[in-house]
Image 1 (cartoon, rainbow, N blue to C red):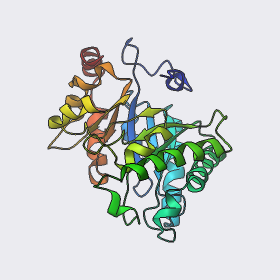
Image 2 (cartoon, rainbow, N blue to C red):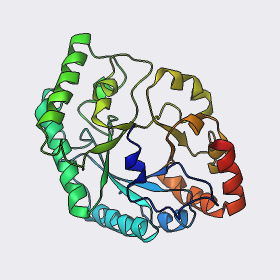
Image 3 (cartoon, rainbow, N blue to C red):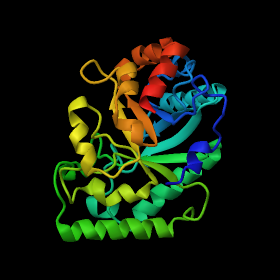
Amino acid sequence: MNRSIFRQQFDPLRLVGVQPRKPVFWWYGISQDPNHLEVLLRSPLVSHVFIRDLGIHDKYPDEWTENGKRALDIIRKHGAIPIETCWLWPGYNTSRDQAELLHADYITEVLDTLAERAKTKGIAETALDVEINAESVLLPLKGMNLRPDNFTRLETEVIIGKRNSSNNSSSISVQYVLPAGEPNLQHHINNAVVSLGIERIAEHTYKPDDDHRAKRLDFNIWGYWLDDRYYSPATALQHHGWRDKEGMFLYTEKADADRYAAEIAALTAAELGKQWRVSC
């Protein structure tokens, strides 16, 4: 466990009372207005924010690029740590077939592009979302096992892709990867590529009845889905799951971001302190 990445750029004043903090991560996608981050980051709870781009070959409106720039300004203004993030697999650009995407050359291209984007923006931490999204040509593989030989081949391609990356010995490497594998399918594509990141974020812990899946996953950061059906900010803080992990990851749908940002901002220092001591 490389704990130094959690100390990097971390402002020691961003504490709950006098309690030492574990990192709390928030998910932001560039397709959404970043104004809710102004409200969210008034609270000292969230320490890191993922700024999630699409795949490296996906095209999108200029407005989304501007959203990402505004988000980065807000995050820095409030002293939180930005994380440059992108989809591993293209979600909308279907010009490459499955064989091209599952090759070491493509893995290298993604790693190098992600590192260069982060360097250009002055961002020190990066992440990959390895879920198959949107209209990806890999969608037929999303809910199935690969053949064992194809799974092993992809694991090898990932190793080669990392080795060939021009950034493999740089301080700018992929710190985070999500989701942290697929517990129900041994040879799922996610399990073959999860080694691309150092710290693994669980999505199979999103719901209260998912706790049993955590035992079948190797991960560092416990994920919570903020939704009326699952968790609120307060119940996520009180949940036992992340007590023995390195941090917590908060995800919510775009339509709910304003609401939960306001709920987090409304938590008083006393409430945060009490819940933090219970959880950590």
